[in-house]
Length: 368
Image (cartoon, rainbow, N blue to C red):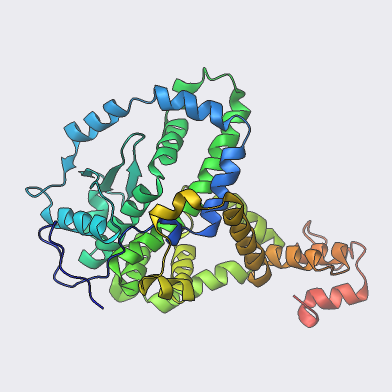
């Protein structure tokens, strides 16, 4: 049933979208996001760094910087973005609309930062790249970050990586700082999956969300791209190669703040087809008023269950090996050697201790 028009916000889009009064961020948060955040908070030294930086970071300076050197979105400037922002806050029931700025930068990007209050920043490269519905999903994505409280950790990550010299005095040592940065990056990559879901709840147009991700990956050449083919890349990325490729995937993603775009698209499409998403759209979702009664243990169990299911259903060679080990599969040494393709240049001529059965399996006659 369509929602009644928004009486508090002007210039809302003509196409009515479902609204989610009192929605908790738990409704759209990816289980991996929650578990990564729990792991981050348990990391040795994190509390010390967090408390120190909370008092150190010049948030007022940050706000003044954007105020003086960017364009603030309002009823007078970038009015179409202002309409999207107010509409996104209305749909996700975010009481205070965060300030939003457009920054001159040809690189398509958006972020939600701030310790006391969130600030949303989008680049000119992103504004020029996306159409209205694609941009609506991005604005919803950033509002989702704000509702989830992600801006605090994102800000600390930015300062730890970009302004490392200014926090060198913290008595934890470089290794401890790097451990925290690595954990923050791992969490933030997972938080992007949550925010993508929030973007879909705001835009309520899966194809627009898919197009936006595809454009971020390949530029403004939609006539040359295809969503189905783009999603097949995600399948090929997950299932292709051997254990060496699995290790390379981990090494490739570690320095990144965002998951790979094809992976994000595949994850979002999977969620949009799920029963959880349909129930949410039907109005059955957790409320913020219930957050205080939420069990941390239950959230952890849900995250652990998600990881277990992910490992079991993954097509990635390393994840399949982990699943087989957990299931008690034998011939571990042989499977690892086959998985790495006799890495080291010996090939079958060196044998490396494999049996004839091992060789036949490696040639494709047995289980992969």
